[in-house]
Image 1 (tube, rainbow, N blue to C red):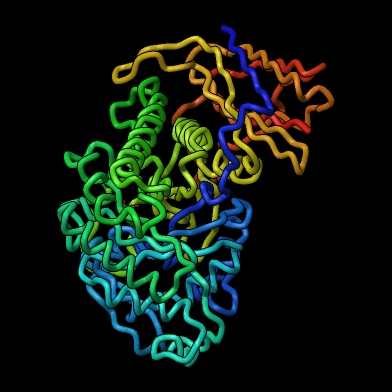
Image 2: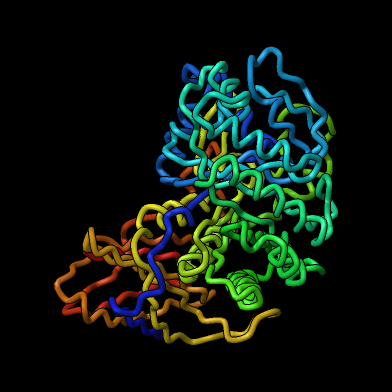
Length: 498
Ligand code: AHR
């Protein structure tokens, strides 16, 4: 089978906002405790942070990390996590039915985020709390000094304000599982008032309103329209969340699910534009896809866990090779929508539906999904180009006209680099790729990275951490602006040219 690709410097989608390679750390399971923080671990630094984990996070080059939830944030008193650690309360955490010790709170997380080189995307509680707690938190984090909350931060040892720029107005408030769940009207009003007060404290911040927790919610679309009717003038982004799984073990259908993500993005952008038109506004609202990933492997196990323990092994999906392919396809989808998606956070970073796993007192290793994420984050910075793809197509259970080849090109004028990300969805055959890169004639091939495996269900574990890993043995060739490559069946490819 053959596929064609045309890449043209002039066909620009948008400059990619590097924050689309963001991630998410929630007080959930072993993400914070035993992931970020394990003071007794041999690699723990002076703060108790695992330095083996920090090294892996740095390899991912994560620009922004959403914190502290997720469902957790809707019952969180942020004041529990500041001040002397020995005085912090142990709380019943209702979202995940655990005990929260509050050893890690805002300041500790900001310190850790600095160590991994990421900015913080802070979420406020609009479930059990409201305007007052939200504006106080902005004052505590961002006001320089001379007020109650900023001086309290200074007394806690943090003289300089944290300068947190991006804030989420609650989490998944459309979901009945959410603590303090609201109707669109109720949430729209609460978010609008919180947004105003937060920006009055610090006008430089940017705010994310909650969209639907998935496009399959009964209230989807109506929720976005109502919430934006209330908040449009006061917020900068609306959020999207999506998780996919392959419980029915239908790989061709599974790998087509990135098309659903694409459709979701385009639908939410259309709703934003409808509200913009309705309000005769000059402002174009952008999207924050602040939870996305594969999540299904651990669901049964989680139902067996006893409640009210500290850091139980929740949502510990062990990802296989086909999951890595879908994650690659989801990343390509985000890049292709770089004109509207300005922030995206893979959910989550460590142990909980995560690219990085740890064992208590033991090692830290890379799951299969680590690799496409790292490649996109490291090599996918620059301008997303409208890549013309001509590919054979297939139909699956839920999708029609699924292209076997999905691809996007990212061009960095500054570094004089062109990177082509490509997935061959074909279960049986390689795709012979022909690329017309006429404006890149002087370029040469730097490397053709391939992630492939004979076993779709192959995983990485602590004992076999390198079972699924990429190699640089792809066969791409470039001559006079003509690219040729054989993309193996079911493979993730990164073709780097400079
Ligand atoms: O990421 C796991 C959970 O998924 C988050 O807490 C919640 O926002 C979503 O339902």
